[in-house]
Length: 219
Image 1 (cartoon, one colour):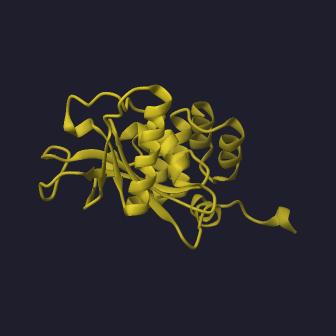
Image 2 (tube, helix red, strand yellow):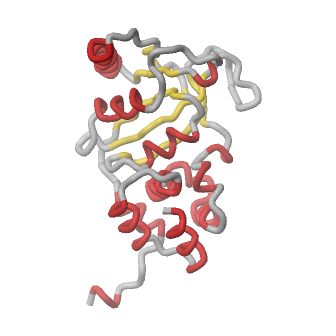
Image 3 (cartoon, rainbow, N blue to C red):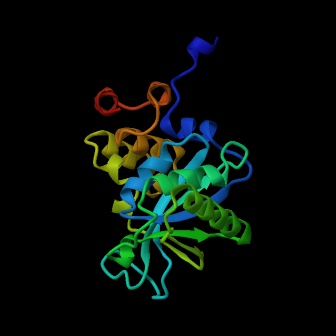
């Protein structure tokens, strides 16, 4: 009987939750990458998120040697459930597209993976200008390369949550960056996602009582 089945582990939830046969990827710069990692991670249809550095020419960027690169978030998503235009809507709404950043590290930028994305982003920017009567300063460029940020930047809000972060890190290890469950929980602990989404996932993830208690308190 179904009631006799053992509880799902977080890894099993990950395998069942969002595993489309085909995904697409979008890359955005919109200030410090911790916040966008949370916001996109909570969205249904997003499979995984990762933060890193892109948009510059210096080789091998790192957090303390960024050169001319920008902090960005990569969003891997299921195109059968989520459209690129919907990601752009979130992007425009969550940074100031009408003024340039004081530092290139935190600039707003769409880094298109192909000409189709670039065309869609350009059309979206033009629509925003028409609607607001303001000039969009956010850059739209082609993505040349992406460098994954250091481990401690990945799923930062989740890692900063007592008990839960430690337990998931021990469960996933370095693969936490590719975890759908971790992406969702990272968004949820930051206050994103609706209540039903949060409660449904928390009910399925098999964590210790202490971790579940902390997670329920946060979400």
